[in-house]
Amino acid sequence: MRKSVVAIVGRPNVGKSTIFNRLVGERISIVEDTPGVTRDRIYAEAEWLTTNFNLIDTGGIELGDEPLLVQMRAQAQVAIDEADVIVFMVNGRDGITGADEEVANLLFRSNKPVVLGVNKVDNPEMRENIYEFYSLGFGEPFPISGTHGLGLGDMLDEVIKHFPEREQEMEDDETIRFSLIGRPNVGKSSLVNSLLGQERVIASEIPGTTRDAIDTPFTKDDQDYVIIDTAGMRKRGKVYESTERYSIMRALKAIERSDVVLTLIDADTGIQEQDKKIAGYAHEAGKAVVIVVNKWDTMEVEEKTMKEFEDKIRDNFRFLDYAPIVYLSAKTKKRIHTLLPRVLEASENHAKRVQTNVLNDVIMDALAMNPAPSIKGQKLKIFYASQVSVKPPTFVVFVNEPELMHFTYERFLENRIRDAFGFEGTPIKIFARRRS
Ligand code: GDP
Ligand code: GDP
Image (tube, rainbow, N blue to C red; front, side):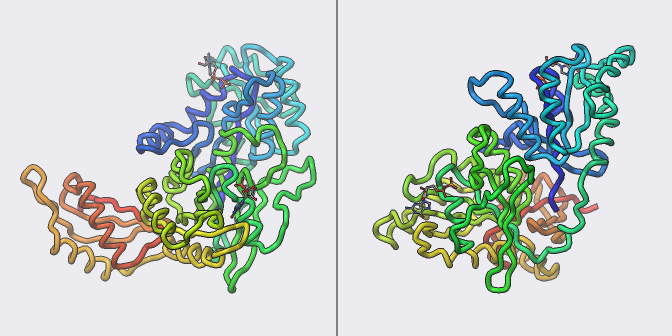
């Protein structure tokens, strides 16, 4: 199910990043501990009560040396285009400034729900300051303090009230949702066009409308698919669309809503550092992944090059060792028929449940064949294992002492599980828990 998206907008220094970091809590720093993978600081998951949503700090989208006003307009536009609810943040110590009014005017015309947060209201005496903000025309102003963490609950209650209903999307789980990510010019739009079998422009939008995402459904061999729109596929010509942060943010947003992520690589230019970073996002999110080497028409001798390319990919994307690789040309459509079967298979594996008794046979056989090495004289005992969830398949192994489950042993168990059940295309997760 798609999560709602909340964007924070406001002129510089009102406290957007402070509030963002507070709402996102520790999640960002935890994620950044994963070697080689960092989430962008302007887009992250947040939680209020039992509701999860995604949060954007539009202040992080900067346009080089453009004047302040241009920057602010672009940031407000990102919020209008990407968010379900906008938090418009002002500074309770400064009163309303001309720049606040500029932002207000843009938001006013957008028809998106706007919640007004008056920040830097650090103590109750300062609450008087909020009344003048009624004149901005967004209803009740919510006094908050980013540094002290005050008033955020009341403001979030209001934000959540405006989340759209999502029931319809929950029903059609037979549909496979996938997105295409990759550096600019790897051929994302071209591949979408080839898959859809016609030269159609994805971004056939009427200027000024604020549709959130342009998802394209299609059916192939009786299977329904939806292509989730990513930045770089739509090319609408807005100033901020060329910024790297915006395209990362769009990619994260698209990944979030996908079952399967196609990570594109350009055969012509070869693997680059940025490719690894982008592929890391898909892996991190626990989605099924298919690696697509596009522009295969530019390569000379087929079979030999394919093997060489595969070695390079496996070497550079070790964390994606489960992802199948497809070589194709979006332009000439060569080998393009090989793609969807892989997407389907990856999606099925991502949602696969295995039988508990068979799982336990596999684990016990693995244990008999290769007992866990002792750590400080203590030996790992495995009692039983169980699959606790899907998307991605997640297993809990009940043991005498979780600390005795070394990373390399976990990896060994993962490989045994993969050999037995075939989880090609999907990450799997294994947790050791103490048997209580
Ligand atoms: P942004 O440019 O809107 O993202 O603003 P920042 O989050 O970078 O904050 C700008 C400055 O305001 C920083 O020095 C913060 O420490 C300060 N600040 C943020 N929130 C509060 C608050 O609630 N009270 C006070 N007194 N200062 C704050
Ligand atoms: P995007 O930025 O990832 O959406 O990339 P585009 O789809 O706009 O493609 C970028 C450029 O690569 C365009 O000039 C395409 O014509 C070209 N291109 C895309 N796919 C292929 C391909 O399979 N082979 C070749 N030779 N060129 C391609």
